[in-house]
Image (cartoon, rainbow, N blue to C red):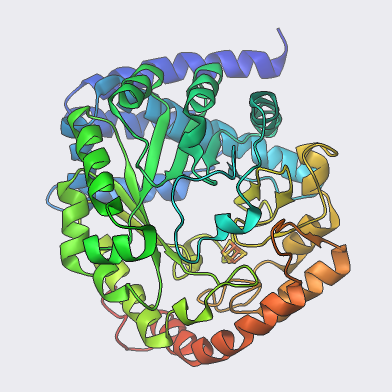
Length: 457
Ligand code: SF4
């Protein structure tokens, strides 16, 4: 037995020991789990997370403690244990170690998660959806998806996220992949309308699949963007998952039209009441030649999101994150393999779900070759794209960066319906970037020293 095999066997033994803490009362089991993590994480790759977790355990009335305890009351015990093993141990401890070794060895970014589209087909037609830009007819085969997962694991990636199209159009293959890779955590951005009793039973059987259901605020806001009846279908799906004790979250895109509803306390409280454990917020991106730029939030609207999401994160028992405003927690832009990348249903390997340019195809290159491609290396060199991490994006807030990277790498547009040049896309973002900059500077200054409105956050 070589050293690596020996170490991995010891790791599995240690994880089996830790899993029994998950059957105990959380008040007793969680402190033991932390002591276990101290010993297990010898290289201290997750020391910051453990410190934060200890603070959470010291405050039993706090929202984070209530969220963690709800995993004991609301989630099936076997699903909870699988989540611990796959998400905490495999993606965070074992995976991060392996990613760090690969980063050093190959001199490129190695992602924590891979986002991939099994299909471009979708049963809805939402306004301003970037997925619609790819066309409606593409699919990656089971074998291709399986190969991506195998290659990812070799380099330390254990988190695989599906987007689309509507990924649950490919339910059968998604469940098959969950079964084939029981050590990975799978998540899907889904419109939720295809979640039914049979699929929920399958989720219970495989235990390693979590949906992030798209919802845009209240019924009026959701149906306005996604079509009549969508909100009720989403609520039906959430109720079913809650009854089955399955974990799920919400995926929320804010635009100029729905900020009021999506940032409201009523909305967050309704997600919690329906059983959502996380709510991820995405800023609308004007991707695609016909993308309506008027959906871009104003600086005032984005500032509202900044304050509200921070307020909810400090008070509500749900894990909220706003990817455009929370760059400071992840070092700015997470794309280009820094934390993640995107593979569309045509097999094009893109730096980000919103950046539809590529110089690599999964049918022509290995994942590692794509990570070392000119476009991904340009991301690595450029990150962070701005020292103010409220201006993280090489497209939205720093459009000159995307233009330069596309030129330098020779990346082509991967929008198959109506290709858009990086020049055209970046031109659209310049007014937005200029308008947002003063607010970004004010908020960044306040949260990094001055006594301003962010002091309490
Ligand atoms: S490229 Fe822009 S949208 Fe994509 S992860 Fe980076 S900052 Fe976010």
